Length: 152
Image (cartoon, rainbow, N blue to C red; front, side, top):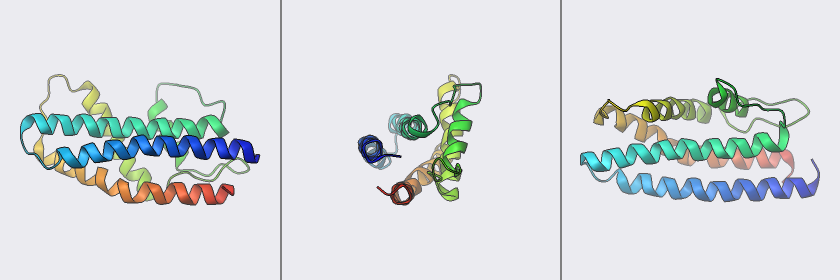
């Protein structure tokens, strides 16, 4: 990858990280309140968090894997692809631990988008919140490692 494309990739990643950090801030704020409205708002922000990560993955995929097509299992495959190294193209973007946490959030995002008649379980939301907050310290290390391997 030439220096110009690498600089563009790094700038796009940094911009998306800024958006992810804003969502983390909203998650931390909403996690302090315990009423049902705050719980629903927290769930919405966790949903948004995964969507923001997926936008980040799309940035990486668009720079390296120009033939990634949306398909039935697009969300699962995009995440899976970020956890693998593609020989001669790019290193893995995510560590195994980050991948596992994001896969849980991907499943929650799917549930949240289709849970029109379900009520959120506060006990399960505690687990999802914990997983979300674990990501905050992990994903930035993954990005630094990824960019170093690219020579950025």
